[in-house]
Length: 288
Image (cartoon, rainbow, N blue to C red; front, side):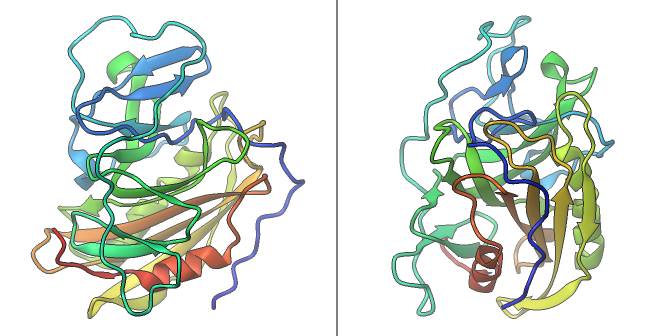
């Protein structure tokens, strides 16, 4: 098992609403609910899907979940400062366990031809659910733009903040990038933006050396970002681990990625070893 340095800093307060956003699942067909400091807004997905990668500029970020585009509107549908966001309903994207799948673990079958396993306490989200992060931008709907969105998603819900996740994983792609090293490097450029707080506190990001892997018989490469100096609150840890794996899948354009984001230093956080276990479970799948 690889050893990643657990990010330092004081232990954070119990999780809940977060200064940089939270990842909540919504099924396809639903609008997107994003909890912002100034209130909840809607964000309709329709800007390139999880195949695109938005430019990162170290600005404010939020975690988002997308469904089908919402009807056009000029005002946020939720003007209040908080909103109860429902958990996903419908069929989860559960796949077939492998002979090596640990007892009690669940398998996620992503539409991009990859499957992976998650611990028993994680939730496998519906196949129509997409998760990710957004940032403030003047040209986006209601002033926000996506940084990265992912399908084939799963999450570890905060034990204290019911509408917050302490970890999330998913399978995005780069349809226009075929080189796995180029893809993982580009994905690494998103990390600062993802963990920058609403008021502009920029974290420190340290990247591990690239690690060569094989996934489903195809070459793969992994980089793990250790993120410190995150603005902590009752639902946000002071640090995080952000694992990125890039590979290719026959029949899929460009590269396919596997991303795991795990807050550290807060109640309910997953240990660094979970990254190794989940990445080791990554495999090709013909479920989709």
